[in-house]
Each structure stands twice: as structure tokens, then as C-alpha cells.
Amino acid sequence: MKARITFQEVNKGFMDGLYKTGGYIKHSGIDPVLLELINFRVSTINGCAFCLDMHYKDAIHMGEDPKRLYSLAAWRECPYYSDAERAALAYTEEVTKLNIQEETYANLTKHFTKAQIADITLAISMINTWNRLNIAFHTVPGGYVVGTLG
Image (cartoon, rainbow, N blue to C red):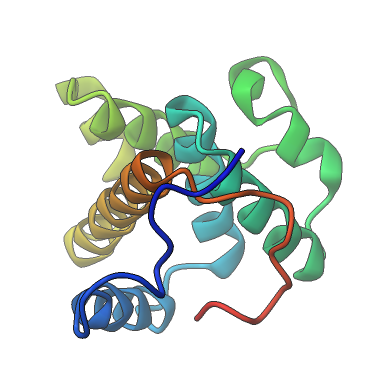
């Protein structure tokens, strides 16, 4: 696979807002492990190979158990996700598919404040944006090195 567009070929300033929002999310107080689960789940739904490679490596570097990543598509059937993670994963799927159910949102409020839910929603939206860019640009997976992108 060859990239259609590399991020080095985009106009100056193209990435500024994306990186600023990413920095906000990183420092928002959301558990970094939860953020990686969200990033990995959305990237699985969307089929973004570059983002799957990146977020798998980042999560493993943070100490995440590989089985929690390779089982993420079947999280409902697995015993190793907390109730808060399950609520966030259900919400993640529904935001990604633009079909948010009241029951899912109500369950989320048992574990997170409105401000945290807003930050989680922004994180879900951002990884969806990155997925769409990387899929459209044909960003080549496999070469990501932990710590080199934000």
C-alpha cells in the first residue's frame, strides 16, 4: 500500500487544531488506559489500520494487557473490563455509529460527570476524525514508534 497523501504534504497549519485538541484530551483527566481502549475500539469499528497499530503499541507501552485489546471487539462477553469501561465502550460504539441510546447515556452518568462525558465524547470524535483522515490518505501502518506522535 502506498500513501495517497502524507501529513508532510498537507498545508501548514492543517494539523494545528488537531494537535491542540489532542493535547487537551490527553490532559483532560480521563484515564489514559480508557482513552486507549476508546481509540482502539473506534479504530476497529472504522477499520483504520494505522490507528490500530498506533494505539495497540501505545496501550502496550502503558502496560495494558494484550488480551484486553485483542478481545475489545467482544468486550460484552469478556470479564476483564470494569463497569465504567463497559459504559464508556457502549457509548463509544454508539457515538461512532451516530445512534446514541438514552439507556446507554444514563448508564454512562453512573460512572462519569457531565464534564467527563463531554471530554469522552470529544475523544471519541477526535479518533473518528483521525481514522477518517488516515483511511482517506492511505496512511501506511506498521511503522509507528511509541511517543513520536503527540
